[in-house]
Amino acid sequence: MRTPISFALGLAAGAAAAHFLDPQSGRRRRNTMRDQAQSKASHVASAMQTQATHAAQVAKGAAHTAAPTATRPADADDVTLARKVETEIFRAADAPKGSVSVDVQAGVATLRGEVEEQSWIERLGDQAGHVDGIKGVQNLLHTPGTPAPDAEPRGLAAERLHSS
Image 1 (cartoon, helix red, strand yellow):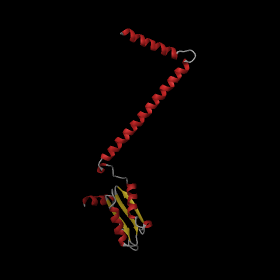
Image 2: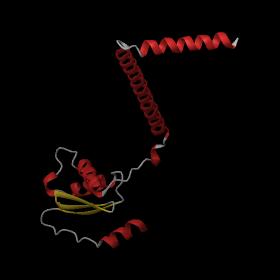
Image 3: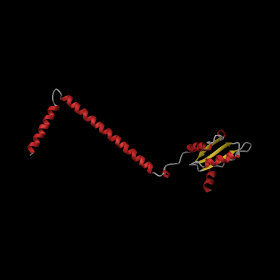
Image 4: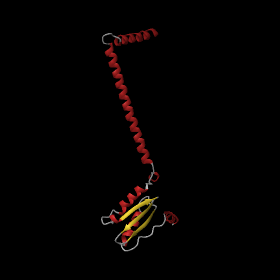
């Protein structure tokens, strides 16, 4: 039984050698075979890359969906918080945008400036305190003809916020 199998393998090897080592067409056949093999390998590699990227994106989406919202980072830097406060307190069309400045340090918003009515002082301070990430509000707004409130040193303001 070994003899017919060995004979068939020898015959196939000889035919392949004659086909690829032919002096007239062998070089073309070898190059064609090499090009086809490289093309197949490139196609397989590209398909595997696409599948791997897809699987990674699906896993990332599943992890994002499964993560509770409370553990996602919500702390923003002070500049971002200041922009969020400005967006919130100046939302109304008649808000005194040009006369109020907003500064945030260590999560504490400081409102400075002069507004026409006492109601704006209370309203802007209240709205600033409701912005996510703001730990406290130092409202130094005043009406025309009244002196600006004295700012407490940063340490005292922070101490008062934490003790209340």
